[in-house]
Image (cartoon, rainbow, N blue to C red; front, side, top):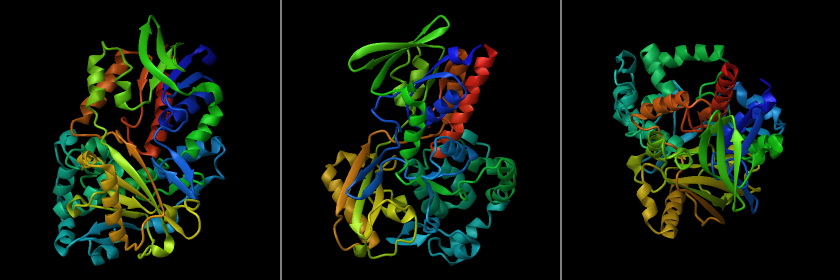
Length: 462
């Protein structure tokens, strides 16, 4: 079958949809990407204002797979790609209103005041603990408490989960949300043994662990990557298109959508949906009520991104790290802060310091029931106290994500299994996006190649 005669419609021009479209287009397939917004990127949103560069979505990515370098080179962004300053290797956790560097060596661990002597001794028991049998129905909270103890859960994992998922470790499945962590126990019998032995496997696969992978971005911000991919796809992307319904007819599919208030449709051989689960629920046929129910059960908590600019001389503590995360026990009104202008250049003009704060998430969605101005004022006040800043910000921008990051909650395997069954029962429809296979930029790019290969295998079987 001639590749050029096979039509593939992709819903969504976020990084998952764009990267998959790129591989397919490069292989010679006829691809059309339908995007509801007027720009590419999905949650990768970069803005430039008054000398500041603001990333409202992902602030960076981890170079965990060679595919990232491959796609960056293919779209001509090699000279624009930048890596984080070495200072970003230092990350802080708030405890008792003081910032403590997260230890990265045995010596630093012994010296740190982040954990008590009792908690440090508790870690020595980890290699001697047996495996759990609970699998997908075990929370990250239960897993960590059993293997590493309550204090490590409270002051390391709780803030980490808030930083990655804007989530709550009590509700997330360890095996779905953190499969590589669970795999260490499953394959090697323990975390410490797995970290050592697993490093050999990653070397063979040319992969980097998320702990050792380099942090990257672009001179013009993270949206530079989807914009560059979109540039290569050209008119294959149609913007301002609101998909309303997918209809199956014989061996083809119809994608019905609106553009400029006009109803239009595409007849296609293959549909790849990469939009968020809650958006996908609205376009599939009502007869697919089980699928729609699975989509609707995936929780996306609200998150507000608060971007602050200060004069650097007013910041009372050294900006010598990536930023800090806040354990739930500290009772603050935000989850943590990224020190944006410290990590990468081009984020703020000279003598200015830029910070990105995150508010809400699954930990405290009720915060948004209050008046926004009061919430923002209280967050800024708490941040200034932690950072010893003696002036008000000279620049404030905010963006609300009503449905931010999919939560891989307990029992998420039931969603994953049904999505596989649905694809098997509906040949030619593929489901992708950050609710499948991981939420990070690296995960999405790696999964885009896997999705591309799945589509090619399906075509070869026809």
